[in-house]
Amino acid sequence: MLAVTEDKKHIVYLLGIGGIGMSALAFWFHTRGMFVAGYDKNPGYVTNALLEQGISVVFDDIPSALPPEVLSGDKSSIRIIYTPAIPQDSQLLRYFREHQYKIQKRSEVLGDISSAYPTIAVAGTHGKTTTSSMIAHVLHRSDRKSAALLGGILSEEKTNYLCNATAGEKISWFTTEADEFDRSFHQLHPVISVVTSLDIDHMEVYRTFDALSEAFSTYVNQTSSEGICFLHENVRKRLNPSEDIPLKTYGIVEADILAENIDLAGTMPVFDYVDGTYCMKNVKLSMPGMHNVLNATVAIAVLRHIGLDEGIIRSGLESFAGIRRRFEFVRREPNLVFIDDYAHHPEEIRALLLAVKAIYPNKKCLIIFQPHLYSRTQQLAREFAESLSIADEVAVLPVYPAREQPISGVDADLIVKKLQPGKSSSIQKNELDALLRKSDAEVIVTAGAGDIEMLVPHMAKVLEQKLNSESLNKSKRL
Image (cartoon, rainbow, N blue to C red; front, side, top):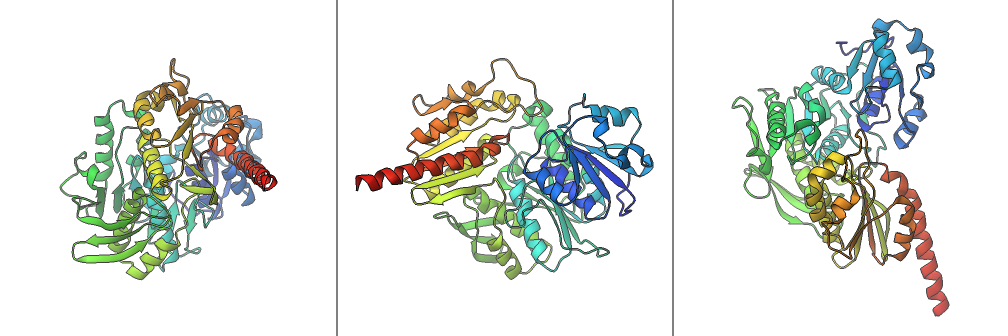
């Protein structure tokens, strides 16, 4: 395994560079002066950001597309990184293997980096991106030298990579997500670990919930005995942590650390953080929903544990503008609200729609959902239907396959058939315009981890045209 190095002669090539985790690695190595390039299947928001920073990206899975630095460079100084999303029959992956390049999974490289710095790692089937981003944002604004590789694009910073340490300065804290897919988080040995949630997911990897729980227990038990682990109160009973690992629970019922006096009205929740005899009153957030109150609660716990002052924590959380595609307002007007979200698990959809209903209790809500993965749809169709039913109207797009092949009998109708007739339907992408023009919903929500985000700009234009047409017709009647 290649060691983490600051040697600028090293060359890094990433297969799947447009992925949110891979792109963060690309920025990490690029800012250290190394030559960085990569391949991805399709262009998008992330690949555009990479290109803007001078990182070479190609979209052809052929060896002839490789830069000369990779084709003819010294292989001992070249690091090839890939993700499990890259198919095993990839021409580039096959080329690197046949020509005996040194190849690592992304999780191994992340493990290399985190082993070199005191690490804060945040795991959970949902909530890890927002929680790790909150922690990283506050640290970035503090006097602590820190770096973070995140699983989402911060709305204010417009990046998934943060570092406030200049060349030569020692990084005191490294923050990252701990991804449970493919057991990637087992590469990490954090000083501070967090588990935000534990629900059925990735059964194509784990097969059983017991196996998933065991994997999370292994991650927790890799926390330094000189550090600490923070567990959501509902997670604690599902894990088997070692007695050598210091633990604290957080939540709203029976936990060491509590969120109390919670006010979810409006788009800025307010709550009190209570840890024993210590209380931080009237903490304000810019991201709505009970789930974000809990995310902020454990973020505060982590930041207090490493010694940050209350004022820095409070101001940092208040200034946290959120993450792209996490309750992102595309339009926000009195007669129309359009929200886009990455939610792709039933619990995430439930939290999303409950937050919408808390803010807009008297407005009709339409959710347009794109299922992600055939296996997840098959496993959780009933749970998806239960969560989606919180909305007043539901439209389900075809399943986004990602890395999977189709499964017979698994499609959007598997979910729709479990929803209330008359309020739900399965639709194709080319039917979205008609749906938006027909629906009388005042709150439109799009959700999913596939390519639904690519449809959002066009949908926003359709809604704008609809509003303009309605306004024109109203003025004519007057």
